[in-house]
Length: 470
Image (cartoon, rainbow, N blue to C red; front, side, top):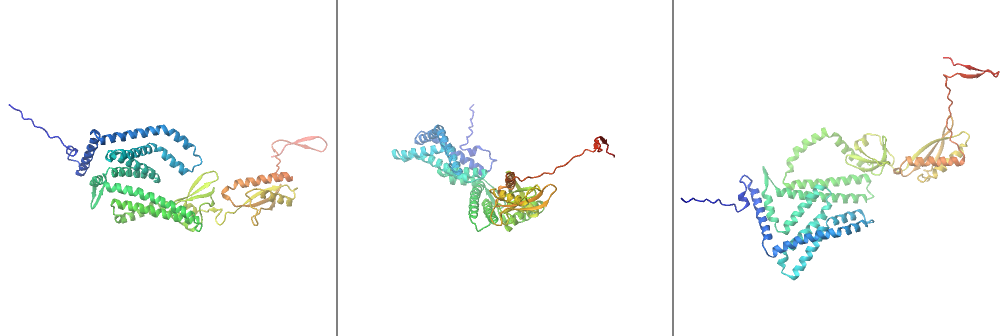
């Protein structure tokens, strides 16, 4: 009795081997990737010039890595001797040193490609030319990506351009675009594909980078314009920055396919929530706009707010940065500067008058004391001696043990500190008084202990003890 042998047909492609429960679009993409992988594997296993070129490319990678190991020490020693270079040039040099392997590979691959183009058939160096092109694109993209400050956006920007440059060199852009567009999710009338999301992320990275560069350029241009006050420069700069970033975000959202008109009702509800829950934040934002518009406080001003004394370092949308003489940086909410009493030492001008109080003995000539005090104040470097701002000294009263004076002087650089200039003037007064023989008295007190018996002289030479009565 013959047995019938039934052979089960084997799947020819990956698409036939996958479960039927997967989406059809995903099956198509996986099948395409399987076919491309089989084609690449065929290049490695089939003898011929294509296989030889792949081996040459692997050899160039190994050679570039060895060149980097041999030369990295010399490059590092050379870079450490660049002491006078600016920071941006040193950072660029650091990025170059980090990509030595890729730089060597690009140089060697293009050299080999041009040599083979001259000595043999052009088709025998086709894959080497593609590898050199891809490596060059990767190197250029790596340097351009440094313009993107945000780490996440930089990685998205770099990998997206690397993948796109590779597919473009391999002539696979159209096939990959069709495959990515087939992977999509439908929400009503909106068709959201993976290709659209990737395009939107790339567009967002590019637009946000351009917005940052544009806002920085506008800020630098405004700072160079002396016709615009510092506070208005900050206000205009913030407005330009907000407008550029707003356009970048809106265009990126529209690129995905979202209809922003449907967000009108939602934005109204969010506005009501902000009005109740974020009152302080909104108040600080509005206060910041008022400060910038009325120009009551601007960068560089010296202010006192409570126990905080320092100069304005920067004006933000929510707070003002105040740096004190001890290096501390206080972030003061804008609302506090609007509602509290603020002493602006340099609002209308930068001149500040300081007072020093001291006293001398009644035996010293007050006319001489005043002359010596004024001369001592003039000897300090930061004290102004111009007409109207020269030091003056006046008698303010007759104390229990001294004649009281006040010494008044002006300075034009309050950002350099007030305590230090007072200390220098006090020290100059001390030296001048020691030279001129002027004494600074101090009160003397006599302490009597009532609980101990007192010795009383009765006039006859005899002494008696008197006990204090209660």
